[in-house]
Length: 381
Image (cartoon, rainbow, N blue to C red; front, side, top):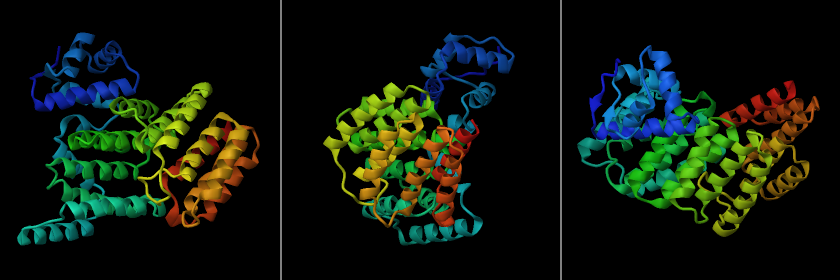
């Protein structure tokens, strides 16, 4: 058998946990994963070997890592690269040469002065990105985020800097479509690991919950969305904005899988968590005000075909939605289009497309484009 395994190490512990999490997210048993690997690799492999990898008793060699990456639907780097090297490499691929040049100059100037951004500077950046994400398109902030992540990865050592990295990595993940299955999911996973290093339970819950609702809303990587939702509530099930996001993310997963009763039961849980956790109306990705909760609910209602619930959610969201956030008004209009398309009304896709066309192109988001794809698919069906 071509295993070329290595003895256990710190790296193998990270690889083992990654394999276990991704396998679970895809709903694959250890025996099934062994069968898939044996078929792909042309060698005998059984469940025991998968268990040894996941429990870090040994590390899969390069031959099996390549096959694992293919079957688990992630880039090879997700399994093999050190966190810091990974952070640098992944962020760097999104930066244009002229931006990278400016970044290098700034970094060296800071090094010559013997200082870089301090904790308060990073906290301010986190808050600024939270606000910017609500009004700018993904492309507009992706390169800025990548540049800041490149700087931050040189400083990330203490719990506070890991918390900053976790929040920024979560937003960075959201600048990639969840449907590509690679970058978005990989960055959500790393954000969760960064959050664990922060030793801050609220950050750990928020990162996982935000990833769950992002993927669930997009209708992408549903297994990963469900896994992250469960992890969030296992860490701390007490009401918080992270828990609200986690519950609503899982509700969308249930709706898309056709389990409408479970989806509605989760909505009730989400309402109770929201009532306890509360949120101000600050236009930030870190907030879940009442209007935003109803945007989540509006899409879910359209997906399960509940007109009454959709009307109520859209009315509540529209009543409280700030006029400075036109993108979310477009979301609501497109939800109506999805409802009609699912009912067989050919005007649904047209209504949604007209709403998207009214929004200035620079305010379009990946999520809106994915929603339009879902509406076209519903209309075709």
